[in-house]
Image 1 (spheres, protein in one colour):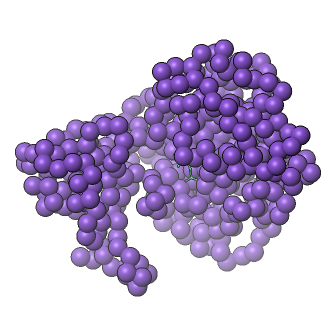
Image 2 (cartoon, rainbow, N blue to C red):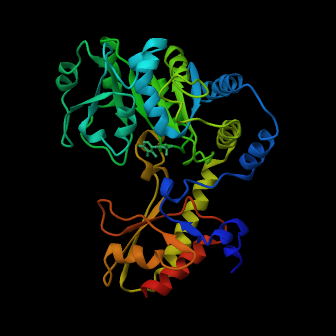
Image 3 (cartoon, rainbow, N blue to C red):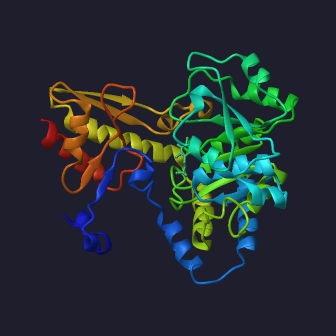
Length: 378
Ligand SMILES: *Cc1c(COP(=O)(O)O)cnc(C)c1O
């Protein structure tokens, strides 16, 4: 099978993965368009002043997000760390040097309990202390208001894996404004649709983080931070190439910065409705091919049409949910992952059945996935 020929991976004995699990860091994020790879190769031919490059890239990000300023970061994860660092220490060199020790600084960040994820650590890396409000059943506005005090440095708002029980962002921003406290948003996995690049800034969020290596299809190790100029300027001082700040551990290269900016331009110019049709078509190829297996139950979930309804990563793309009368979900996952290529689906979330996302499938892979399901689960 020629799809298994790749001298670099072959040499290391590393298998090919067909990614039906969406933009997972564990599987390499996404595949960069050729235009991005070409741009990175070209960028590798020169030295540049990294500060000048990051400033120029920031202007492009500002233009596409409607924010005052922007910054290329090392993944959304480092953007989250820089958000809390910038809110706590600002641009003060003494405090930039001092973090993650927050003595003498505001260091409390209010976060909805339903917004807590395994990405919390990135906020805490800078020394932030998370103050929880509400629960998955609901959150009262008084819970937010009564937790604001002289130690409050910001309010965190996360578009993570499914939200329930959070106060609407518009209301959170209104309350934050009343107390002059910044609202920092994690929208890492909410692209596409492109509308989401402007959505939270236009509602008044102070800083917003996105992944560069998920639906944007830039280098996997990149992210975007955009927002108010004084905060982004501070975030820059906390990060590489500057040597004093907490973000020095998370640098981006000149090739990655050019790659991210090129990915952003390609993303903006793309015909997203035809991309969505291709993803849906791949779902249909798989579900039509496996209809004949009586023991399987297959449902097709489409992405919402209205960008305002896209509030978690799952709803950015269509997917199939597949369950079997004969095998547990974990067994399905295991059977499909065996062999080369290894087919990875998503399991372990709240639904019965494994989820099969088609947004990361390359040309011809939908048929390979269908055949493997036929072979493994018939
Ligand atoms: C993926 C993700 C991140 C981390 O993004 P990276 O670009 O991989 O660093 C943070 N928050 C959420 C909600 C995510 O889905």
